[in-house]
Amino acid sequence: KGLITLDSGYKNTGSCKSAITFLDGEKGILRYRGYSIEELAEKADFLEVAYLLIFGDLPNQEQLDKFHADIKKHSVVDDDVKKILDAFPKSAHPMGVLSSLTSALTAFNPESVNVDSEEDMYNAIVRLIGKLPILVSWTMRKKMGLPLYYGDSSLGYVENLLKMMFKQPNEEVYTQNPILIDALDKLLILHADHEQNCSTSTVRITGSSHAGLFVSIAAGISALWGPLHGGANQAVLEMLEAIKADGGDTKKYMAKAKDKSDPFRLMGFGHRVYKNFDPRARIIKKAADEVLGDLGVEDPILDIAKGLEKEALEDQYFVDRKLYPNVDFYSGIIYRAMGIPVEMFTVMFALGRLPGWIAQWREMRLNKEPIGRPRQLYVGETERAFKSIDKR
Ligand code: CMC
Image 1 (cartoon, rainbow, N blue to C red):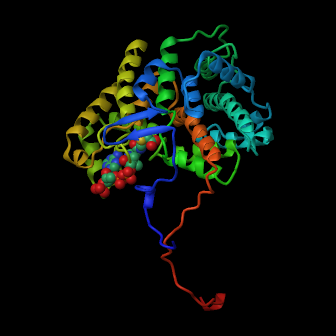
Image 2 (tube, rainbow, N blue to C red):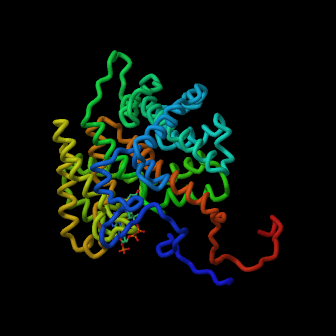
């Protein structure tokens, strides 16, 4: 009692007990509720995985149908939200817009603020899962100068999302591309949870004050935005573009990444927990090859990424520090092949992470966890006498 242990960055500090996601960084194992990420990415769809994460088990058909129907019922956003979106400049970063709009939704859904019973929680959860894809698509459509669109409730969750994002005003019939549906489903599943990372801890700690679900998620979106976390997917693509524009000299960028006087880092490399490989990165690398092949896209950026990965895996600096490609290294290449603008990449990550954030928030509330309140080691001045302004 009274003794404070300092652990900057919480490298060895557990913040909670959790039954949601198991992660073994040495062996490269990731499981949601006991199911391997490899199997889920292959066999499940995103909504099933969302249900699994939030409620603890894979749904049977009846449970899944009810969950989907409840989500569809709430797949609307108050028309006034458009006015808020209108007020942002087109140049605004979509992550800032998404976080603001998610927070603003609270004003239009006051019943989702004080959610103490399981039923209130459920209602807030299906509301948010219904509404976030609309905000995501509006954010992208604003960026691209397209009229806003409300979606098509006859479609599956991911199909509807794609239609909301890509439907053109002059297109009578929107044709679904199964390659894009599969690719997006897989990407969203791979991003759906990752235990107590920066944004998830933000969601739990925000919610621990009994702030509502929507604002807790808005806080998580803000935390995800940073380039050391979800923002890395945008930063990777910008880095690969810069290398290409600079003549494709990967060695020059490897040297920069190793130079301690240079702030440059190899984006999409390294992880706090994975020290052998990131299982998500393996699946995504294979998917990038398949999706680009299926879509008939030849992207020189993919070759630069593979070259960079090969060099890094053989380089002593990266070997010594156990730095491997992470989930963000190849995901942007798939998003780009799908026609998603680079500034939207982290927004796609946020939509994928939504079920994980929700599951963690719900677990924290159901476990009646106390308010999150870390301590500190004070290293400032000891007591000082006040000096009037003329004596300073
Ligand atoms: N490029 C060059 N050097 C690196 C990199 C990198 N990407 N990552 C870590 N290092 C070095 C770092 O300089 C340090 O070296 P030294 O021991 O000589 O001082 C050593 O490796 C350990 O790094 P750290 O910063 O202490 O490790 P951390 O656990 O605090 O940080 C990380 C983890 C992911 C923030 C970091 O590896 C990084 O900045 N990577 C690039 C950004 C990135 O790809 N982020 C996405 C992470 S995965 C998905 C997600 O979280 O959203």
